[in-house]
Amino acid sequence: MDLKHADRTACEKPTTEISIGFFPADDTAAAGFEQVVGDFSAQASQIDGHAQGVISGWTVDRNVPFTNLQGGAASGQGFFSLLGWQSQAAHYAFNETDFVKENAGAIAVAGAKGWVIAHVDFIKTAA
Image 1: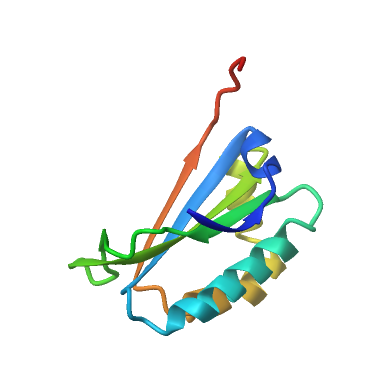
Image 2: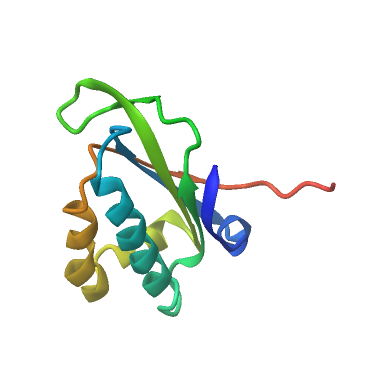
């Protein structure tokens, strides 16, 4: 992954959201998407009690298979974003805030052709 933001706090929280926006390899919208997601994530992580820590970057492979928003097969490059949360419920509650209602539209129109979101709970092990 070609990292753009790397705050390991995202993986130290009880739950980490992993979202991937997909773009055809030749899509010019990809450059603007990085900035939109970076700005949104940085602002979200400054709101007390919500997302904490941001890790984001592009897949090095520009031929990653994905399902496009219409349900068809496609391939291209993925932009990963990891955000740390206290719980999945905290993430869902955040989605109902005025901040999200006022700002999430910028991500929706930034041009991703496919989208995947998941939550994981990392387990800390001794090195």
